[in-house]
Image (cartoon, rainbow over all chains, first blue to last red; front, side, top):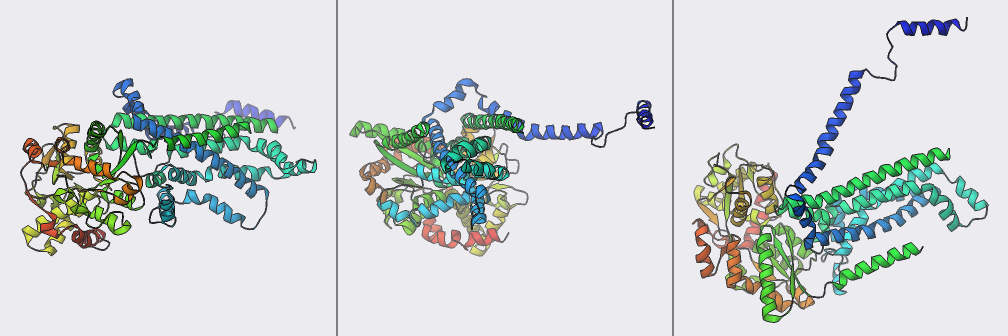
Length: 295
Length: 333
């Protein structure tokens, strides 16, 4: 009896046309949806990206590289790298510290801290730039004092660094908080009971656990630090060869009808984005593998 | 840990290297949008001149943007040795808000401190399909006008006042002029923050039928994109735009660059400076350069802001301050 039922089922399946599984849509739906997604990607991602490189290489490779030999372009590239080299480590330290506090401890004002971490995401970059002008500008709170002591903050490199740090503030912390919360505090407790001190616990237990999430956060943070336009534009003063970062330099070149050079510098930023994406997928892949290895 | 120390050392070195570079004489010229090409060439000429006469190497840095916005940056502490803005009102603002220059700054150099002048013309697309000849044609329904925002752009304020004065002369009253200018701005789809932004809107993004432009900017657009794509239309009446220049006293005194900054501005009045101005489609003021470059400009009846509006201080209060005529006509729309 018990074996008769499956038998009849299988015989029926071979006789009738193959029935559709509940989790599978008809072929035309799948094709249309995939098609729409591909067309969308093509128009809004691949096409602009291709256009950037096509425009940049329109007058040949020589003109393309000439754009980088220009002293102003070179200084913009150096400034962008310098700003990222300062902003990313700052936010790395801050992000780990903040995520550690939020995920591993209970304390009053915790939700306030989380809100503060999110603030730079919520505020328009232009506003964050203006905040610094209001504080450090000549007419601002600290302006006259800075002037007296010959210190330059806005319209100079420190202001650009500050604005970038502010805008890229949440990336590392936001990446780590959910990860650390999901991991809980059991392993740290175990380490502590086994006699490790706080520092050892952090280096040997916490940090290895969050390694991949941390890399991911750093990559996002770096991409934004190099690409930030709005906040930096407000505090830069646009002095050529001095306070122009790459995105600002692209705007200047475009406004000077020098579109080959503008797109050449833009292509450098685009390459950075591509490298970021590749690194990101690699890290996601490694992370997924390390998770599988763990379970 | 070693690696962290290394990175720290690297960062500090980079920062120090950045400071150490600033040893030569360095001037910062904060200017408005359409002067980029002119000053790029003039700076090189002045650097050569200074090298041969004084032996020092001078490097002039440039910053460009909408005139009002640039003035705002200087007020907020952008350390400009020299400002070369689109109109006296913006330089007045540097006195009014930050006291970086004396009130009578405009009397310190000849010709109201304006070494070159310009005016406002129309740039239209090839063949002038909408037959735009004069200011009247701008208010016709369906004409799309490109002009920057008078709040942030100097050129836009000259545009605004030129349209106003045209209507006042034609229709006889300030009330009629206000109505006319309101109709003009009703036809404006995009207000960019500076003249160069408007040029790219009109030329590269191909928005609008007519672009109210600095004369030099219009010439530049025609030169860059070929005479085949655009035509310059000169209206029956326009404004004599006097973009003034000044040394920023507090900054140069602090930096010790007063003498060279003054020499820089005086060089604008020299034959070489005037010749470069003419070459970049500004109207030179020296007789020789004016004679050489005169033929490229169309004769047009020009009025000055003193004649028509009693100077920038008054025009600013009456037309561009918060709640003044521009706000009234633009916010009402």
